[in-house]
Image (cartoon, rainbow, N blue to C red; front, side, top):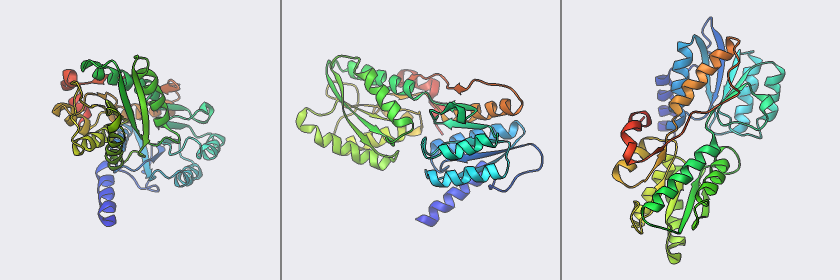
Length: 324
């Protein structure tokens, strides 16, 4: 199993055209991209989009991966500083543990562009391109409220199946979701289950949540923070024999970061909504922002694209972008 996983990652890296850390081409600005595991579809899509756009912009990119390991990424950041690269792009693995290394990058006068996840210390990076987690969680909460209202519910118990709650985007999404949902009288978040972004854990958590609340009238809704987690909730509900949809007594499921599993679930009627936010746009926007910085321009410090709720009614508008 391990050998097959390694082979898959190597094959995907080759398909994306990722350079080895030392494999700099001659000429052009040198950029170190400190990435997450590209076998993940979200990260892989983001990486492919970034590298293709950066190459078209005449930049030389070396990509190194971290399996969500902050200590390893700190070493990779120090290595990039030692190589005196022209810029560093980071999908940061920890908003806390990477601060000392980022401080060293600042001292070396190397511009740092954060992708996907920001940090509070704005002086330690040049630009951030990624989601507005508060906006994303809030719009997901509104989508859940809409789905619950379709069944005529005036009160509802909702659970959140979250990513990693220690830091990063998940806590912000959860807080904003809860605030938006509970602005509707009678709608309440009754549980938050951490799954570390693992779909199998989401399926197991959904089954346990449904069993836990079965004696209390059952759950009315589950918010999966991304579409793979929401799809895990769908599978958990199906295994438990719980009807999915927006009708009276149905379980309403809402996802996020529109991806293939969510699009398919919406088509089948097992998921009510997802949120339009794609890693493809984020990768492209980051590469274009980086080019501007290296050309001496001053793009906005923080950049996030607009969001939209995707349901069956507007699925055709977004299906192609969200299927990869």
